[in-house]
Each structure stands twice: as structure tokens, then as C-alpha cells.
Length: 287
Length: 49
Image 1 (spheres, rainbow over the protein chains, first blue to last red):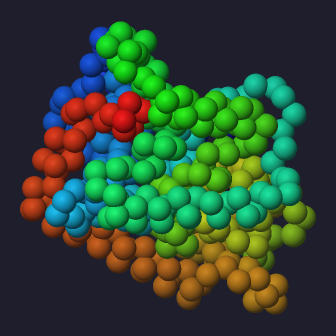
Image 2: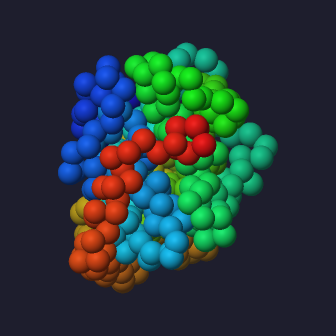
């Protein structure tokens, strides 16, 4: 485990949920910071949340009538994406960190299985639905209402502290709870299944990985193509072939296991003699 | 290396575009809209309806 990344993830989760008294009172924060979208998935109805969830805020704009173009939320998402790409997922997203904590349970892991690749496309479908459905059904945040496990966790915290909320939970909550339980169980065996298959935010940030200022780079002159980086990658990326894949969350496992230190990740990666793609003779398209 | 420079430039342009869109949204008062939504419990989000 990368202790530095783990520490950043823990700090990011705590900072984004620093309204600690809310967990005991069942009241959500009403501070001015709630108007600022956080980069990762963190439900604004969580009693600890001190910022706004970008997916919820986006759907709120798109579901309003007349529809408001969400310049502010989309602008922030593009800004985070262009700066960090999916490093947001690897370092700042509370949902990602929680899945990694669940994965610490020592049970056999199965990161590659039949159907893994087709399932990865599901998150793009969910991203499209998240953006499109509010246009057709007003005031219905499709993703938040039917899928988002962060909102379900928020409901559990609220219900634990407030009997009124507890009494209001019905069939919709039962559905969301089933989704949450499925994600928790899957996280025991598969590395970050929500990020791989369901998260619209991860799908969005994935588009930016090839452009983001925080990037990966492979020194082609040093790479011995031993395959250790691909074997180490729990997101199923082959870094030697496509270091800036949309699936890469910048966890750095590949760089740590590289025997010749050919892989670098960061804002300065690739600024010297290294390249951000494969050698021309490999014939593998990167961008 | 050339490709890297191009994608780096694209990243910078996207970063500025994101900042510009954010500024446009702020000028339109969209921060207040996000705040107004975020300070109330979202019933759909928590599975109430």
C-alpha cells in the first residue's frame, strides 16, 4: 500500500466531511462552502458534507425548468479534469477510498473476469443518462435517485440520528440499499468496482487523462517491456502501452513496481526525454 | 515529445476554459443555486423520493 496516497485519501475524505457534529444531530451543513462543488463523489445530503456534489448539482441544473445551462458546475468539472484527470479518483474521491478500505479485507481478489471489459462501458452509458434524462423528466436526478451509493450512505447516517428520516424510508431506499450492498460486496473481490463500472464522474474525468496536467509518462528508452506494470495494475491498464488510459486512476502501483523506473506520474511527467505513449514501432494507439 | 507538448497545451486550454465557464456561472449567480440545493436534504439522493 502507498501510505502517502492513503494519507491523502483519508485527509480528503475527512476534509470533505468535516461537519462532524452533523453525524450526531442528523442536520446537514448550511455553511457558504456548500455552494462549492467538491471534485469527487460526496453526497451533499451527507450530514458531514461541507461541499456540494458535482453530479447532484449538475442534475439539479439540468432538471430545472426552464433548463439552466450549468456553466459553474461544468466549468469546475472541466477545471478539475484538466488539472488532475482521474487522479481525482485516485486521491480525492471518498467513494474510491471507501472501496479501497473494503478491499483490505483479506479475501481472494478477482480483478479480471469475463465481462469486465464490456461492463466498463456501463459508466459511459450512466454518464450519458445522468446528463440527458433530466431534460426529459424534470427535477429527477436519475443517478442520485437510483444508483448513487454516497446518497444511500448519507441516508444511513441521517436515519441513525433522526427518527423522522427513518420513518420516511421506503421502497426507493430499499432499492438504493441493495445497490450499496452489491457495491460493498463487489468491493471485497474486485478493485474499486463502482469506479470501474458505474461512476459517471470517473467516466467524465477519464476523458481528460490524456490532456490533464497531472499525467503519466513512460521512458521508452528505459522500458524493458517486462509486463510487471500491467500485472500490478488493479484497474486493468497496461501502462507500457497506454499510460494515459481513461481507466487509470493514477494510483502509482505501476511506477512503484517498475524495475527500471521507466514510469513517472505527476505534473512534470514527460517533460524531459520521456514520452506519454508507446514507441512508434509498437503500433499501439494511445491518443 | 511533440505529441506530449500538444496534449499539454490542450490541457492548459481546457484548464482555462474550465475557469472561464466557472466565472460565467458565478456571474450568473449559479453559486447561489448550488448552495440553495445543497443546504437542504435532497430527498431523491437519500432514497426518500
